[in-house]
Structure formats: structure tokens, C-alpha cells
Amino acid sequence: MRTNEFHIHPIGIVHSPFHQAKGTPIQPAFAKGVMGSVEIFAEYRDGLKDLEGFERIWLLFWCDQARQPHLQIKPYLDEHLRGLFATRAPSRPNPVGMSCVKLLSIENGILQIEELDMLDGTPVLDIKPYVPKFDSFAVTRYGWLQDKEKGNATADNRFFKNQEREI
Image (tube, rainbow, N blue to C red; front, top):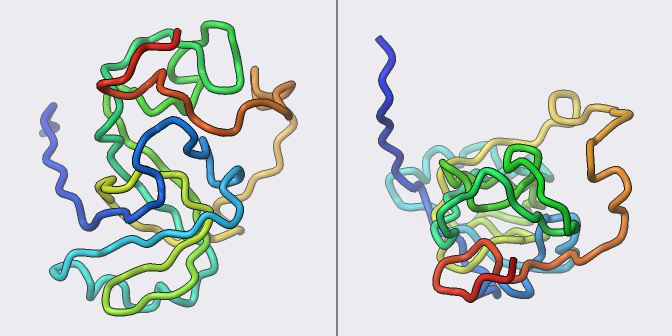
């Protein structure tokens, strides 16, 4: 029997140079050289075995600072209203974020990472290895983002709690 209720518990926490949304890179691709770490809680550290052999990892995290979602929004890189599910905006019905970051090292349950696009204190839900054979697909269309090669690559306050709304 399926349930409509889920219980999620963080496995760790992000340590980042970003303490507010404004100015934070909106994706790892825009975070070249940004370093940080992920502290994995002691009860989950055994699960890190063999992870160090991967150059990149997927971090799944909870966007705990995101405001309540709207189903149509003006996303970063655009000024037109778009359907929420056609964006990567952090304000979502279930504010799960994902970032593919570079894994530099692991020591005592601390993952040193690069290309960090998360706020300090962000709860980490899961880690998965990036595997090019599984995770890289050649595509010919990517919606409204196809013509957005240039644009603001850092966040403003439009999706975050306790911030003046900018849209």
C-alpha cells in the first residue's frame, strides 16, 4: 500500500561560503572555484566507503530557506512566467535540490567539494555517484533555456524566506 506521507532525515549538512541567497551561484556550472564541505553525520559515515573514487557526486538536499512555491514563476535567467516544473527554482512543493559537484577528498566524514551552489547549513538528504554512462545524455532541445546562454548566474532573493520579493 502506498502512502501520501514521507519521513526524510538529513544525513549531513553543507558548510558553504554563502550565507544568503543573493549572490549564490544558481547551478554548479556557475560556481567554478567555489569550495566548501559536507559534514556527514556519524551514523551515516560508513556509507562513504568507496565514494572517494568518484570525481563527481550528486548531492540531494532540502532547500530549507526557500519560500512557499507558486506554480508559475519568473525563474533565474528569464523575465517571463514559466511553469514551476519547467524550472530549477528552489521554491517547490517538495523543496528538494540537486547539485552535481566535484568531490576533492573525504576525511573523517567530511567531504571537501568544489563548484558549490548551496547555502551554508543546507541539510543534505542523500549522495549518489555521478556516472557519465548513466547521467550524461546528448539532447537537441532544452525548452525555454535554449536561448539563455548568457544571463545572471547568481541568485537574487526571489525564492527565499524573509527576503523582499523581487517579482
